Image (cartoon, rainbow, N blue to C red; front, side, top):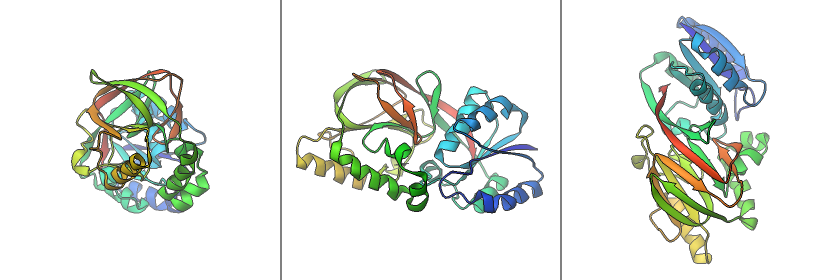
Length: 295
């Protein structure tokens, strides 16, 4: 069988340079003919998979959430319908943890070879041409994922997100947003908005795993309302700490497949930790069962 192995040498705590021989040995021993591509720039993974992905029987991604995003984007754009293996090597590996994947590189490789099952997952479409695997967000903490230095992410993992996010609290922006979630309308002033398909976002915002199904054609949408007083801020902290978003005085928490968001200005978003420019009106769509991931 022919395998395309995409590796991002800069992702998180990656040890692929040390483990690459072990990874290749495991795959080759299993009988795979492996073509290895080391990414050289942002978006490179998407280009390679979109243009050549159909030539292979399986694609494997070794990197962080951003690298996985590139590979999945390439698969969707190139209409590549093969199983995807993921060797997580990022700073937080939110999506891998949600899937219950091994985070040790060699163990993750062996799990792909074992190929016990393939899990179908929904993928998000952001506007007309961008995609996200597990999170599209704006506001508080959002810029942390793409502004934090890679060295800090490598050393501190998700703690780097928390430390940088705390520094954001000094000048929190408020976003006046009106949005429709499967036709139901909402409006308010928010400091954070996230549309996700994961149990954890940056290791900071977490959800009860019992509430999350990666293949139910639904996103979890959470909006943090602008706190009006210190008590509201305490409610937000308590809710985020306990993963309880039922207090409607500070949270908007809904599930939906299709979301239309209107903002007064163009706003920067983060898609799986990578910066994306948003328009005043953004349409976000759930693509049901878009990808099959090996675990």
